Length: 170
Image: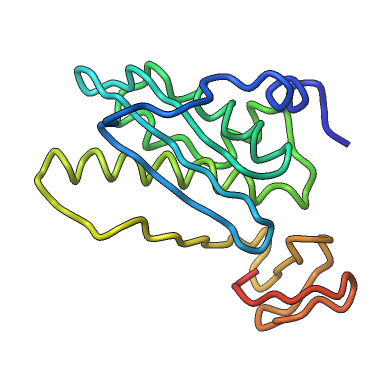
């Protein structure tokens, strides 16, 4: 069940869209759950002057993207780098446990957009987006199925509970 804050950001997302010729762009995706997220930045005086997002995914992913943009706009680059997945989830007043991975995507996309901005500023050219979905453990050596939240062994490639393949790391 989603709370009122999550539902508000899902039904009325803030800062949706594309920034043409952005100063930085970050794109992440999680093939396990199908969420894809792109963050666009315009930077002025080392602060996030404008931020937009495009997200294809579940209600949690859209709410996370919306809240993330609200948290980041107006922040300095240094402040925005410190926005974490836990900050996004807390601002949304919580997410269901099996949707916490969506908050990782939002923070990751923001950090990638900032890295892209810093690389462009320094004249560093990178080849295409490097989509990487790291996962975190709540407790050491515990992983959970991203679909049904059943505890799994670190090396699992199939979830017996929901009968889904876990081709990527979980």
